[in-house]
Length: 151
Image 1: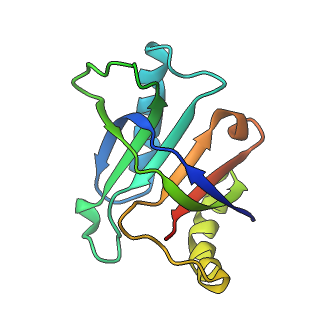
Image 2: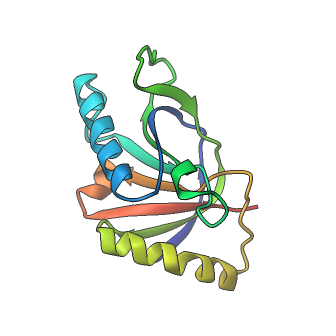
């Protein structure tokens, strides 16, 4: 698992929120967002899709966990849709873990990254959420990233 430190900018996003247990429903929401983005001509070779878990499932009931599936849009893009909401991500310093883009690799990474983060001496910034980043260019190479905010 390749690890780098990166300053991630604030992103303007369009997103669909899923409330409920993390997992299969997040995949469905991801496909819904991609369909919407294609219809709006927002999905291309430069697109960045984000998955943002808003809640810690160890302290939040599964049925109340919120997961936002997002696409980065330009600052000028007007989000005028009943189904898709607009927002902004918190930028800042992140430890970025590059992983294989498979369900198994993502699941394993979630188990491995926190011990690795602790061993490396970084402190997680709990005021910002963890971001799963799916840049189209990386997906083409069967890679994705998990970005952990640090302070």
